[in-house]
Image 1: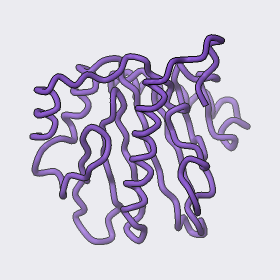
Image 2 (image 1 turned 90 degrees about the horizontal axis):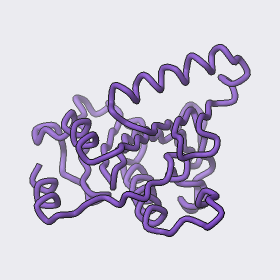
Image 3 (image 1 turned 180 degrees about the horizontal axis):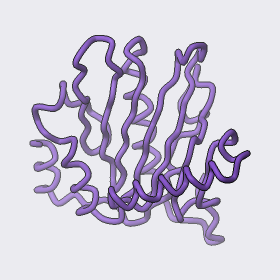
Image 4 (image 1 turned 120 degrees about the horizontal axis):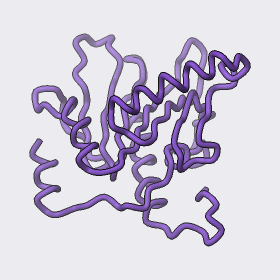
Length: 200
């Protein structure tokens, strides 16, 4: 894509001080008025504490939890990522999944690994107007008006996939993506505490 090529040509390199995916995913208080919840469905990242998290409903059955985390690790290996999380957000009324916004967030060890995964999404025919968020972003095509909104964003060494139903406002997906990109930039560029404790 043109914007990706321009950034690469300009010599922009992502920061090497990466936080884990749980640290990067915005908290409810980061998102502003109306947002009601952030639920970690699963997260696997050695830079987070704990390094492995699964939804409480899954965690009650340790065998289910183990299977879920094993599947996540296989997906990470296939994608070349070193961290992966799935976060469910709530905005306003959550009845019948209204107000639900989902974010899949992956962290990559280097730019080559990120570029390889990004290539699956970056076909210029596979997009609407490119939104201004992160380093580069695209909307995935919607075959029909009732198809979910899907937004793919690159920011630093992270790749986000954000989704919501067709009835919801895609502007809220952009808001969630921008807040995530802000945290990636802000935390990665902030010196870690001397104690080694994770950034808030």
